[in-house]
Image 1 (cartoon, rainbow, N blue to C red):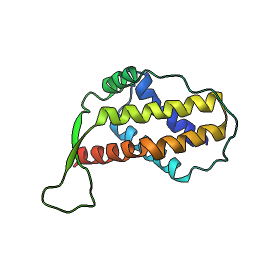
Image 2 (spheres, one colour):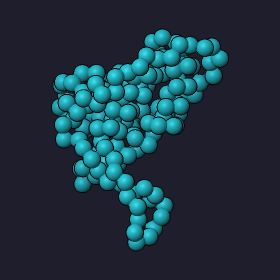
Image 3 (spheres, rainbow, N blue to C red):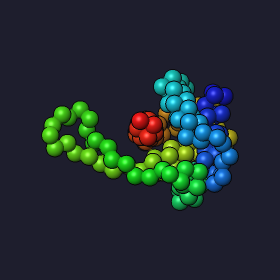
Image 4 (cartoon, rainbow, N blue to C red):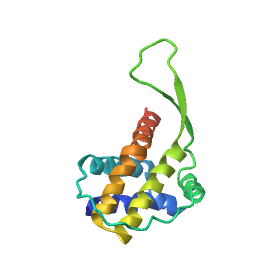
Length: 151
C-alpha cells in the first residue's frame, strides 16, 4: 500500500505543480505508469460497506494545464482502434498524450483523496474501479506512445 501511495503522490504532482523540476521527466513518468499498472494487477482489498461522501470535484482544465506545462511536447497521436483485425483498411483513432495523462492523474487524485479521507479498502476499491473502467486504457495507450517516441 505504501508503494501505491508513493506512486500516486509522485504522478499527481504533474497535475498539481506546473513546474516539476526533474531531469529525464519522461523516463520518470514511464516508471510511474508501470509502477501504477503493477499495483493495479496485484491489488487486493475487502469491500468497505460504509457510505462515505464523494470526493470533491477536481478542476480537470487546471490539471490538464499543469500537465501541458510539464510536458510541452506531448500532443496528438494516431492509434489502431482494433488491433485484433488484420485487414487492408484498418480503422484508426486519435489519442492525446496530454489528455491520457491528465485523466490518469485525475483518477489518482480521487484515490489519493480517499486514502486521506475514507478508508484503505475504500481507496483501493476506487483505485481498482478507476483503473479497470477508465485509466488502464489511457495508461496502456500512453506507455505505447512514449515507447514509440523512443524508436
